[in-house]
Image 1: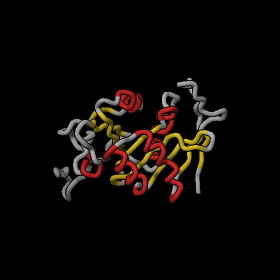
Image 2 (image 1 turned 30 degrees about the vertical axis):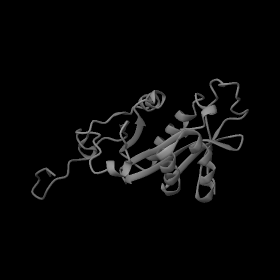
Image 3 (image 1 turned 180 degrees about the horizontal axis):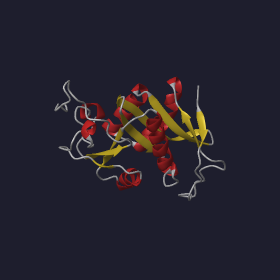
Image 4 (image 1 turned 120 degrees about the vertical axis):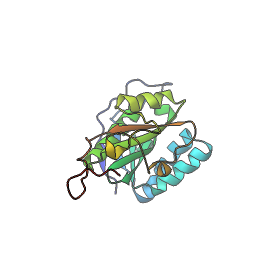
Length: 197
């Protein structure tokens, strides 16, 4: 089953003479065997260990969203909930000939809407240090770099204590975070004293 939503994006400018589509791109869920439709996007955007990991992740994450143009998957996001309150954008990818048309922003906005609908408090994504376009994309949506020793996400910071091992962050990547919801009340111990875990 493919759920779809008409995208509210018009291509900004064709690159290399490639027209995106005469009709607006649309967002779809890729489930089961349909996820294989995103493999060409992975092949186009990744090499080596990244390609291997992206293909593996494609088959394991609970949410795969794609953007279609003329019936072809031209971009995708691989999303997960690390814990119920924390979302993670494992991969956001767009075929090279379809970049710079706003599709990355469309996919990231869609991911944030999905996480908000699930009452997620914090969203993370990792970006290669030398990938300036991706860093700008995430920064425009309010993401910022997360310091290693930052206060944990449960305490109001964006520190990813206990979650980094599930994110597969490798040398040369920056962990970015965005708080979608304010922190909840500080837990208290019986007797009214704040818990100091």
